Image 1 (cartoon, rainbow, N blue to C red):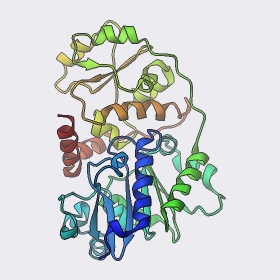
Image 2: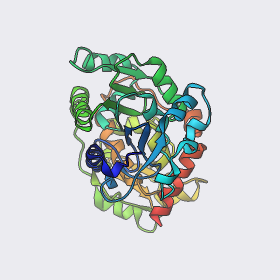
Image 3: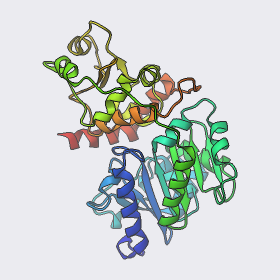
Length: 351
């Protein structure tokens, strides 16, 4: 088996992965995953690792592709974790495959990049997402796209992509989730991301500045703190963003890192009181007109998802029809073994 260390294209994948992972408009925290197929082996990002660290540490592991594809076609549950197909001798760190490994496998191109870019998420969160996307992508030279309404990430999503995508598909839009591009080279895949992102982009709605002094006063003595990224405050200072965020959850990683939806602090209430009366205190607390607070026990990556919420909702028109994750879909995520594992890694990294 040719090792990834011998492959110049793999070096390009590491570089592109790191750049995508460091750009909060492209992906956030441990979200997103990338892969390269070589000699019957799928080198895919490991679960819980960060694309941003692709050049600093080993985040990829090898999975034998032919038996994985057979398992996907047979709807064999072993394809969901893909651990049975890891090439153990070439995985000395004992990494676990990404929950999206089966998604990377069903696309035939050598390079697959899956990200949660905010331009895409703002479009695929719409109830009329397919039509909204068609108006922007149809007719673009060299782009063959498909749209998949929200399906639980992993094996169910992989099978749905395989079922609905025509031959030659190189762009897949995932309802309430994100973007996948596929190409024969890393450079071509990155170029697809740029083209799709540009086509889907909309003006960002401005937001008033946060009231930092008021937030600090509210946080004092409470289990809450200010976010590390001031951009997160726009969720609460822009009434249109707040109206969207207060209605529910738009995409899976918000549930994983911040819990269900966004709590809104009522006038006259305090963060401490909210935490004391809640069996599960909200991880993200919006203070209307002032900004947001984050629970001190938030998982590593929670701050990045707080910023993402402001970025996504700021790109959604006030009157856009939206589709939120259902209670059952949220519960499916928080009780899913793959996400329990990913949260355990985030918790360990935080400590």
